[in-house]
Length: 273
Length: 255
Image (cartoon, rainbow over all chains, first blue to last red; front, side, top):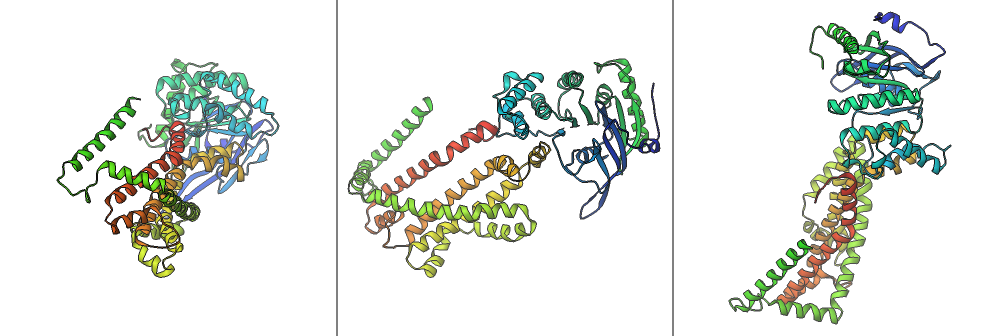
C-alpha cells in the first residue's frame, strides 16, 4: 500500500518512453552578496503523461524553485529538464503555471485574461479563441463574471480565473505553485473538487507544489517529499486511492499523516506548517 | 447632483462673503476689489483679446516645456529603474534637484539665455524633468514581476511582452509621473513668467506681474482666478479619464 523508497532509487531510473516530464540531476544555487544558498541538490524526478505528482516540503525547501525550473522560468546550474524528451530551454505554452500570488492582469477583465494566452496561439481563429475562453470560464463556474474586473473578484474566484487562463491554451502540463495557499479552507475544498473534475475530463499532467499534506494526498497519484537546505527529494509515497477523493476521507488522512510524519523526521522534529 | 449643489452653494457663499467684506469699506478698494470689479476686468480682458492671447502664449510654453520634460524624464526614469548604477547617479541627482524650487532656476536661466523664450522653456523643463524621473523610477520598480513571469509562460516575449504586458502594467505609474510633471511644469512656468519679462509673448504670469506694477488688484486677482481654472480644467481633461480607467481596472485610488 505505502511504497517508500530511498533517494538513490528515485534518482536512479532512466527516462522511460512514457515520461512526460523528466528532471535529471537538477541543482541550483542562489548567490547573494552575503551568502550562497544551495537551493536544490541533485533533484531527479519523472512524471508520466496524465499523472498528478505533488511535491511537498517545508517552506524554503526549494519546491517553488523546482517548479520554476520545470516551467523554464529559471535555469538550473546543473542537470536538465526534458519535456516530451526535448530539453527545456525557456518557458513555453506546453507547460502553463498557476501561481500562488495573484497573477491576473488588472488592465484586462476576466474574459481578456483568459484570452491573453489564447491570442498567443496562432493556429486558432478569433472565433475559436472566444469560444474556448467561454468554455473554460464555464468550466470553472465563472461564465457570469466574464466582464468583471480582477479587483472585483474574491481570492478563490481569482484563482479559478487563473486556472481557466492556464487551461485554455490546452497545455500538456499544468504546473501549480501552491495555488490555493492564500485561500480559506472552504474555498480550497471546493477547488479540490474542481481540479479533480477537470483532471478526469482532460487528463492533464500536473505537478502540484504545496506544503499542505492533505491537499497533496487528495490530489496526487504520488507525493514527493522534499527536505530543506539543500532541497532534496527524500521520500516518495504512492496514494492508491480512487477518485474523486474527499479531503475528509479517513484513508486519505492516514496517507497525509504518514507524509507529515516523514517530514517531521527529515527536519529533526521541528514544527511543520 | 447633490454634491454639485453643495459645491456650487459653497462657491456662491464664498463670493457673497468676499463681496460683503469689500462692500463693508474697511479696506481700500484698491487692495480689496469687489467681485464685480474683478468680473468687469475679466470681461474687458476677454473682449479686447488680451486674456485669450495670454492663455494661448502660456499654454504653448507649458505644452512645449512639458513635452520636452516628459520626453526626457520618462525614458530616464525607466532606465534608472533598471540599473543600480543609474539609480545611484541619475536617481540621486534627480532627488537632489527635485528639492530645488523651480523659481531658483530663474536667475540661472536668465544669465544663460537672456530674456528669451529659451529661458522660459529651460525653467519649465528643469521643473518637470526631475519629478517625472523620480515618479517613473519609483513606479517601474513597483511593477509586480509576476506579470512578466505569467506572460512568459503563455509564450509572450520581446515586443509582445513590452507592449501587451509591461506597458499596461506600468500605466498607474506613468499616469502619476505625468501628472506630477504637469503640476511642476505649471508652477515653474508661472514663476518664470512672473520673473522673466520678455517681449516675445505676454503670458498669464506676466498679466499677474503687470497687475502688480500697475497696482491693479482686479487684474491680479482676475489672473489668479484664470490660473486656478486652467489648472483645474487641465486636471479634468488630461488626467481624470486615465485615473477613472485605472480606478475601474485596478480598484485603487478610491475617490
